[in-house]
Length: 290
Image (spheres, rainbow, N blue to C red):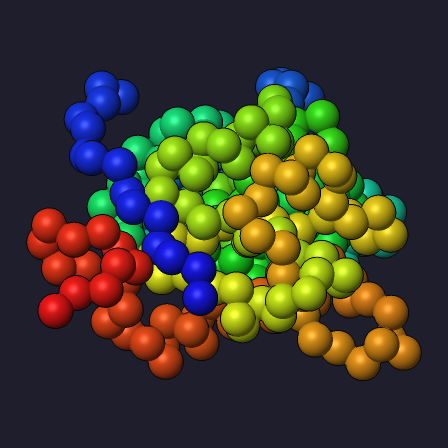
């Protein structure tokens, strides 16, 4: 059983209704979100700046109620028909009668994320290596939100933008789980280790199962892209490699399924052993006492 990585000592760091929607042309850089969960979550998130809200029947009243009860001021919901919504959104967008023009969420640096979770001895992170499909990444974010992961970390140049498609697949999770971009993923894993995270890379060829590889305390679950898996430097930067036991005839799981199973296994491990991460004062985590 792997030992819990000790956490570093705590440090303080400074740190109007209309039937035909108009296209937004006065301010560049807006992002259209669509779908019930994505839009309602954005409206409820006080950190999300919302420029416009549009809805078609029968979703109009629900969005109006959500906007009126939001913690941050929200624009008046514009009534639109479905054809008008489709004219504003990407082709094939499944909008479910709701859309919101929003500004991107504030970026969160890795150092700021670590400051945010410094007191959480069981923080969970998902780290993605070259995952580029926005719907797949969105589904990972949805699972991360369901299992209370602190963030999804990925390399800037290989990560998809937080588009409407990603937000739709995340089903509101994008408002709860930040996407953290880093320049060098292998170096970022080293930073996570220094912050007390045990980095577990999922690899179908690993000898040990994920259930047998989980330590006490903080864990970063590292997943590679479909078809390619983890790159060599990323693999070598993990503390251990583990596999999800599946029927060999299946070959492999897709990224979002693997992430969901991995996060569930972490949650199950916590439920089964609720006190294991607690360490007696003056002892090294994982060491025998008594």
